[in-house]
Amino acid sequence: FVAIWLKHAESSGCRLQRARASTPMATVAAAATMAGRLPWGLPRTALLLLLALLGSAATAVAIAAVEGQCSTGGGAADCPGASAPAGRPSPGLPAQFGSAAASAAAPLPPPQLAGSPASAEVPAETEKEARAPEGNLTGMEGEALSSVHPREELSHVRVGFVLSLVAFLLVWIIGSIKFAVDGSLPARLALWGLFPEAYAAVSVRSVVALLRLKAGQTPVVVLQSCVCDKGAVELADALGRYGRKAGLQALELPHNPAMSEVGLKHLAAAILAEDSPPLQELDVSYNPQLGDDGAELLLPLLKPTACQVNELKLADCGLSVSFVERLAEKVAMSSLRVLDLSNNVLTGAGEAIAALCEAPVLEELTLGWCRLRPEDVAALAKELPYTSLRSLHLGGNRFGGPGLAALAEHLPRSQIDELGLERNDLEVGDLGTLGEAWAKRPFSRLRLDGNRMSQAEVARFIRALKSIHT
Image (cartoon, rainbow, N blue to C red; front, side, top):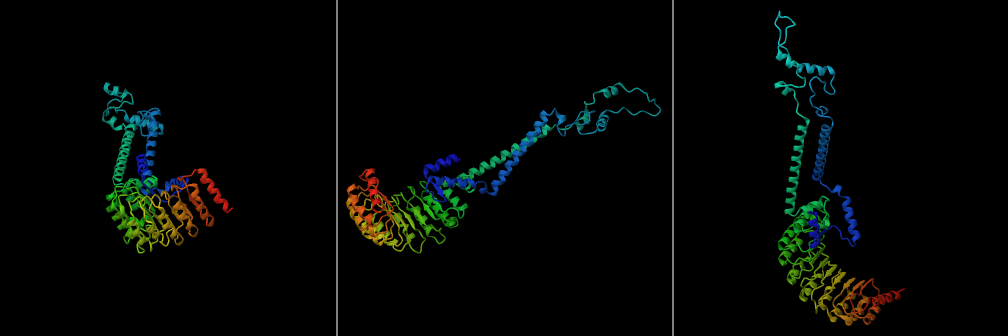
């Protein structure tokens, strides 16, 4: 089961994250920390089951030890409770008790009549029975005096132990199947510390179970390639019931082509409800089936009276310029800090993008692969000195040297500290204006990979920039 869940989670990309790990070593450290808490994460039921298994194992060991002693200790006489032959003292008993038992087991002669000689002969049959071996007892008296062999007792105990173990396994299997059918088995294993939380969210039902079972411990939920409209309705219902108790802060639903605007409508309503979770991040990227109509369902989330969503990702959602214009009207009074509109065709949306930048606290804007023209970049660049933007990503737009020149003209008066210009058909000769802007106000991060220049030329340009302020 664990191998199947891991493979499914890896292929679908569905996962639940308690915290974002920026490096593989951080992920390994988080897993080690989780493994260190494993024994203390078990609930009472699991502890009781563990104690029952340990008790059963101890009973089996004791039975095996007693059986081995009886089989290798020299016969039934060495086992406690076994009957010793008549005429021989049992182990641990005085000799007189043994002889008394032997005499009691022997047949008594018939009573003599008064006046008969004491030396009268005993009948032959009686004498023969009297001379019989002491250990051979026949009749009802011998059956009453014989005891049950200890191996028979052990066989009964062994059968009872096996039956109880089989019953326990059947109950465990039935419970596992039940939890697997309703989707809560991975969630319960993660809750008990027996399954990594990063792979517990293999389905919508698993996430619903996690939200229900782990109150206050589920800040980030990521469901990728496994949400349809029906699943979105179930998830919306779970958000309304358990989202606030679970402390949900981020909901990421990328790459879910089976989810239409019908499912997104239920999710938006659950987020906007009065008892909604304090959601801060929402990601519905790479769902081109949503389009403008689906994305507009999320615009009420940007109202000041709504939940405080400060990070919205709408990459590759089939958006148009008209949606960007309506979005610009909503962000003017919002608390949005991060906005991702990459992989949407926004040719001619320069003025609408410039209006987007008027958001009071917007710090990061991603417009990669939006087919922006140089005039669109110029309209955006004019607004940069009056915005709070610190990170601007314009990769993949191929606006060339004219677009870079318009951008570099206004960079020194802006607060931009990170600039992404990868794959924009830039040449070495186009970097002069960028160098002049950097000399006036340097920024910490610059991406130039994928342009019409070699790595050596890029490295030479970076060294020249560093030498200006050294």
